[in-house]
Length: 169
Image 1: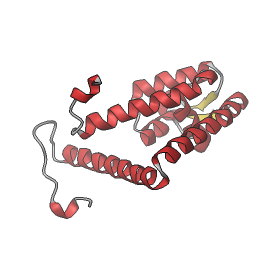
Image 2: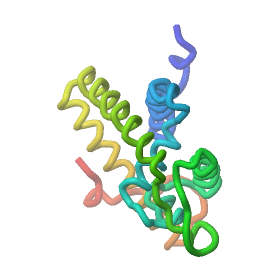
Image 3: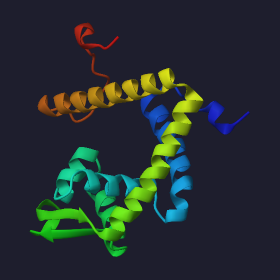
């Protein structure tokens, strides 16, 4: 019996984090020969999709904490894959990919697309889409509940009931 068989998978937080790590490990393995990990690729892809955006705006859209964002940006900047121009700090500098960044992004994107196709093919197209829909809904619900907790002044405590009318089916 695997060690993970003894763990509680009824917890959505644990299940999504464990699944996220397994998926991340697969992508990291496939990107390794490019000396790129999935977090760095995500940031590279975001800059490619949103050229001229600030580091703060990209971090906010990706829900990345400041230290993760700064660490991965520093790696990409050191490798001369991204450039930052303009104001000071993460809120003022506007990011673009360098020529080398565009080339690496294209190579990594090919691997990313192939890996996604492999996963979707193995799962089945319907299950893969159902999984994406579930994860989007879970993410949106979690963000909404966190915002509501903040607005209500809740810092911690027991479970918060979701009215039946707001539950997804």
